Length: 256
Length: 256
Image (cartoon, rainbow over all chains, first blue to last red; front, side, top):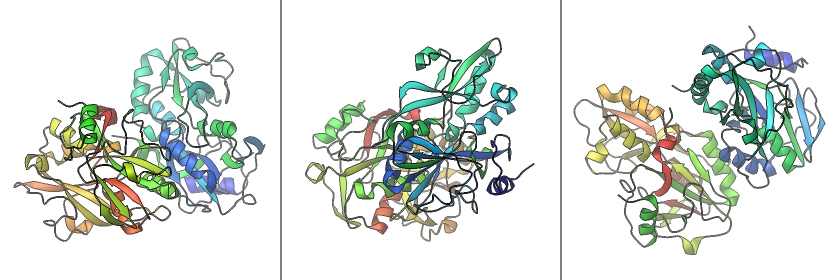
């Protein structure tokens, strides 16, 4: 079983692979990097939208390290990055050493991978894991509360859950607000403005089993949607599914 | 029984009085107001120190209203304010209308008044309420994680709790992380650098009953201590005990 430091060393060494299942039991985080000039708006966006944007750490400008994994280098230790200019995706490099600047602030944001393990531990099947595909994600008709120049829709992840286990899924994830917490919606995709559930905006379509109900959680892709809509001149994020593996055990973000 | 709007109307009309017990069942908040130039540091200070500085809302620059109480005016609706220049307390007015500026950002911060009611509901006596005095607060030897120009010590509130009820007090308050959450320390004031428990740095001395144990919670006075140490050119806060009464029921910040 890989330790978080082992996993990061492999990515630093050049491995490009989704991080799901790597260093199990440790929290993985979404990454958003913005110039200091935009950092206040992003920090406020997280404060105002804690369910989709639960900020686990925010670095000092220019720093390449985080309290979530002392010794890690945020420029090299994720398997793959995305580079954004004026809201457009321009590159997906394996490191961002050459792009780093002294005014960049990094935001580490909780990720639903943490609660998927908690669901499995509670006997709730996670279809995207069973089917070995990426979770389905949708832009919704709900706007996040704007912050300065940053605005955008709530993005949700959807997991089909057996009807008899929906209450269990709510209880398990409600105990983990730092990794998106309880669902924002159960059933009725139309009410969220989702017109074609078979065609998610991000990730793969889910295959529901008979008796499954669609359950929607706030999703860490929400800040990427805000970047696309709000068009800061420069930003770096993780590539979807290629998260930052921290040294923090999942249990730290699980409440009593 | 006063509604929150009734209480705020009385303060707006000139009543200067501590808010404890007013509009019971509704969340009261600490207030910190800073120029936009210092707002990023304060927002980051809250993000990095969520236990003493749980940010419930942060306003747009210049705005006098908050999502926690639509219709309220932050310049007039607290019973008493404190005005700070270069870290020094210079005035304690009943409103701040004449001091308001378009670049001021308001931070509303959770307050332990919310969990005192929860303690009473669980059968845990709250000595400062029984004795009708302000809670005891101490500067500790623990530094908050700094943020830009803002740094300072963790300030704690102390409540003497019967030894048999300490575990209950921990469980009850752990469910309320937005209003300081679980204690940071139980017993042994020396370990926090408190040399004379009979002389708190803020508030009144507590009278412990036989068998009581001192229990310490992170305190919303922490940002005021950081202002005193870090000396921004201008700041406004609430006067101690004279909180902002919101429209948010306490139960909203109580977890399942």
